[in-house]
Length: 444
Image (cartoon, rainbow, N blue to C red):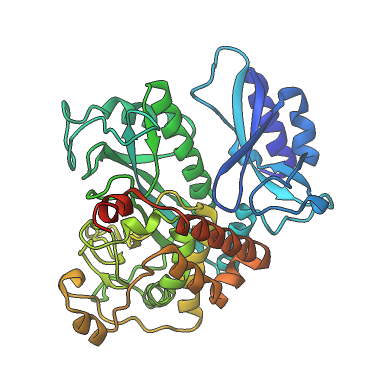
């Protein structure tokens, strides 16, 4: 549909479904969901001209002397909110692109950053598709980490008392047009996973932002708390965001080559090589919190080193197997990101790393055999296996020196993001933790 047709379609849907309020959604550079509401009487004007707001208080947006912004709704993202009343005065949401008052895209808008990078791949005749495996925890409240259960991987009731929470979450997501392939209990107590069905990267970024809110809204309705904190429980697995990705040329999966030893095309090999080479310098974006690096430690299924394999889940990247005749399922699974990242920026830097490999013809080495965590440091060095950053400061310094990250994110987002993360690290560095008190106070 053209823009006028889309506008009329949204106006008709709003009228037919008795929508009274429309929440206009966008994100700051950290991936926090921002929103303000308009009434249906303002909807037509919003679809034509956008809605003005003050961006000075939005993290990473603008200084106070240039704070006027315009939120321009994306008509294709109009959906009713299932947890709000439907019988009358319903509430809908629409994602927005952020513009300057002259109508130009605002370079600090994470959604625009992703759109700009997707145009780059589109100019190559390709489409970037993403499927997600998203993990999270349920706790009794936001005041502590008391789990709802002591279940384990794939456990069913009575241990998995959150089955109804997952069921209601899946139904709400599907009501909002977000496809869910499966859901199950994960390894740690009170940890759960939902897998979102493959779609284009922009739709998936919007879907993940919606998903995180839906999970929390459903939990709140049942009097519990849901969190996407990467590592809330010491001694247990953390929550990952496994990103399955592929490039398509029309209806054909450009990653697939059935007669190859690993069923990977030359384009896929170069893409994978790009991801491997640039992984350390983009980790600050895919794992952006101090707590993210408490998850990326040995022993808890999260990757620690830059390696790839066909099956081993301890590697940074694996190539999932597919059934014969299902070549369209050929994909690359990146296992390091966590679900608290900004998906617009994370997808952008991941795609940029892969495209760098394609454009510069990077050569992919052989997959890692054996468990990389069980190798000696010397063995890893001989194989050219380097570690991921061990903390946020190391990660930010690598990103700060990355030409690829700066080009991908653009000067505004790049500088704001790096500055924000340095402030976070300094704030963390000043803290005295419970570990230090328990470890040192009795003996020093």
